[in-house]
Length: 479
Image (cartoon, rainbow, N blue to C red; front, side, top):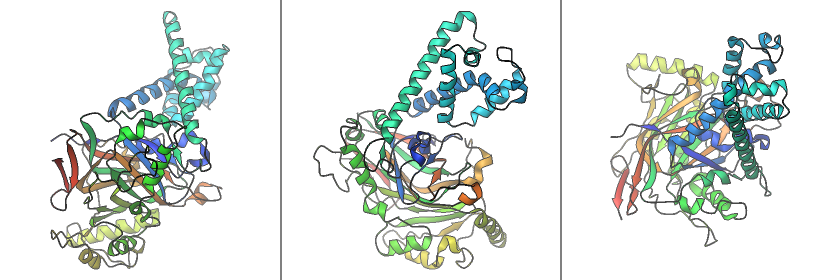
């Protein structure tokens, strides 16, 4: 069995805009787990973001990381003079800077967003063009015989930043709803045409992070997966063909996605399941940091939910809900830590029940024993339950910063969920605008990253994925 690893989706669409129409908050940041970039929406509730599976999983992020590291290295000396390093500011430009000063600037720049780093690089690069002392610091430490090659490399980086900026601006411009429905044409161009065999991601856990200095961190959301013909979506990505944008909008407007509008408690989910508007849940999990509800992957991803009116437009994939999640507020987390500690001490095991009068924000008005009875599957006899855990199992070699663990949910899944499209619906936020001095009239939604983990599988053309009630739910069959 192949080792489970992070699966990279390329964020290319959102119907919730980006905060203040700023390219530094672009949607792909949500699908790229790091500590420096984030997605910040324009709208404040019930918005969706879509990512498509990247063919070159590691190469794409390696190239971006290498470029980022190069910019930090070249700019750190100038940044030490520019941004408040007392030791550096006392030394005239052109004189050597102690290694400690340059190192401090290096560490500071590592926390900057990619957009901020690009702006810094371009401003210093402009100074280099006029041969100012500050600009020449971009070439600090370069041997004389290597200066021509390094100057050429700096120009290439400047061209790359300028081109990337143009592409992002094109995604943010045009259309009456440009502040809400945004499509990254450059992102779609990264998608390779569908060739044999097909590549799908098989997801077994998802890390959801809202770590950062956010005034409106995400509180509730839901994850969907789908299986789509990427070649249909990627072959005509340009502003002259609006059908791609319309197809994305229609995909996130499917009934199963809209049914999660405003869903913030377990009671609301139970009501939707009882009405037949949501699929069967598998289990509900609660930790001090928050909780999630996993849904059974019982629908067939190869069947399109609908198609657009234009015959030349892509066929729409069927969205399958993977899991709904909810983060605890700081106050709720304190109560939950005490509650779960008492429960585990009393029962010496992970408890399988909760008291709704003690946890109203999670359960709503429901009773968990009624939930378990309602979720009993009459076909296979599966009984779901609420699983409250006082701690989460730490994954070996987990790449994420332990210091931000209280702001992450490690959504462990009972079933395997597969596809090449990941849709993230952001339902609402924890409003911390007053605490952060945010004077915007309305809240938005801020997310650090969404990181699926699992395995990549290549399927021959004659093989399709089907989902069944029994077993792990995922089966590959020849058609």
